[in-house]
Length: 89
Length: 232
Image 1: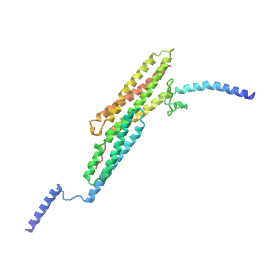
Image 2 (image 1 turned 180 degrees about the horizontal axis):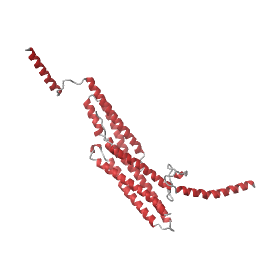
Image 3 (image 1 turned 90 degrees about the vertical axis):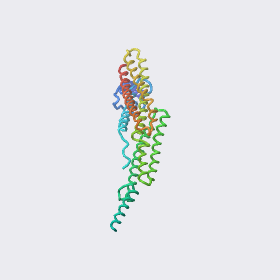
């Protein structure tokens, strides 16, 4: 009897927590690209879903590539400004 | 009489010295000092080569991360960097074995004329790496555009006019960016040290195209966000 009551409590808790978690995830996906999220899909190292609605994680991944691009373009500018230098006295 | 003979001997000796050395200097460079100059020139050349080899190796690491370019372009970049590293390493060995200052100086000049590492190879290789990053970003954004299209198609109960227009702008930005960048790797990898400084123009044009491409990609990312906002 006690076991049955415990199971019922657990099921009710899961039913309440389930939608709450989903809602929380939705909010997380609306976070800006610079927001640090605990959700795995928002991690910069994770691969966003390849299908379904476009999320902030997808856009954050693109932002990350563009950031890397900016770094390399700055280095290219620096490279182009460099001369050969002297090799003889 | 004996004084006159002595004067003549000095004049003849001086003439001989000019004739033999081709200079009016009477003091020959001591062998020890000459060797010091040769050794210094060799050290300078070795340092110049080491700096270049290290810079090329660093770019080799970047080249290994290339994901989007064709196997041919990737291979051409790798070959370019490795051949310069090998060539400079061999040149350094030659210079360290050179026996006189003139030869060292002639070989040291080849560090610049035969390789053009700083003014050509490094910007060339970096531009190829940047091209790869831009094409990768273009691919990602194109896939996002496809998914946004699916979302628009599914939003039958909403007015999607603006979302469709923004998505069309996004796709146009992507087509322009990738269209400009796609031919760059092959153009850049065809540049040779012997063509410098004439081929510097190609480098400058590529850099401009890459900057334009970057702006287009950033605009496309902004438009992707706009499409999402349009659908809310």
